[in-house]
Length: 112
Length: 113
Image (cartoon, rainbow over all chains, first blue to last red):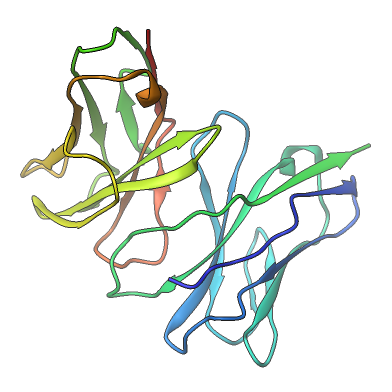
């Protein structure tokens, strides 16, 4: 699985958009970008995933650059409950097994 | 639909003992994976089971083992516990192998004294 690089920490004001970047310059053509988050003392929670097109669901949007070497997770209106560690993971999609290789993630702190 | 359940939630053991942790996946899910989380190493993959077969294994010593039952419930066992085995052990379930979304349980906090 390709390695990812994320900033260690980020701050965001409540109600504003939180934009979390991820670099995955060695991603392969059959690898997807997944985002999970972990709120303190809980198990990780799936957020969104994508291959090359931008994706949006009820939680977030995922923007993947055209060369697929980086991506950005966008929380459109961050709330205090979005304070968590956000993990960007690259792995083969369906059919490739379930192993997730977690990096150190980005600690997002949403403040009033 | 009930989420992934793990038992026990907290456990204290002493060095040299063994421990068994249990994971009940979401109903209908046949794939179960296990992870270890420590402050120093972060989240690390232990192993993955599907239809009672181990499909993938992480880089852990043989003291760590697991199994999956016909009802998809899974157990992991750690023998000859070491202080460094103190960690949060997380279980994740998904509908099938390679499925995009995995659902994590709350974890079992193991403390080795």
